[in-house]
Length: 120
Length: 110
Image (cartoon, rainbow over all chains, first blue to last red; front, side, top):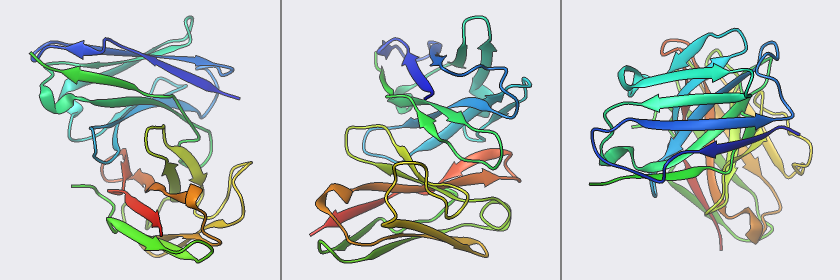
């Protein structure tokens, strides 16, 4: 089955840029109709959908952070990268990489998540 | 503030049945299938229900889903202590062109 693994620094300082990398296995980023994206969860709070990139290169962003996000994919490395600029302590969260299958919308595979703390 | 609305908590005794509601609008639940996710504390969410009422392989038939208009419901029968978790509904919102979630519902099996 598909596996997704997140990597990122565990701590970043306010105003810095956070780069999160998702490495996918047993799945190709060229798979028609499928996408890989990101969801985050601040400690003790609800899930927040951030962004997704599809096999075609189409990208979509959640409205609350849209101006600070950029999602890209490197098909040769089977990686999807999410960049968040100008972070602040409210960006402290567990970040999950997710897979969206083709067909109707759902998120069928999730990475284990990585906790990133924004602190000076 | 989540786009989809869920009750913060529900509870029931072992063996009983519980339902969790998820309310949205015409731009999300009203036109897109709903999925449900279970998150046991300290672990990643996992897909429980997709396309309103379909179960992925390995999910027992104690879990069911339904949708009507701009609302959806997750049902769990034969409650077990292992079902204690947070449950989230999710779907696509065509106005936002983004995925959306509910605020989550904490299930306590008394």
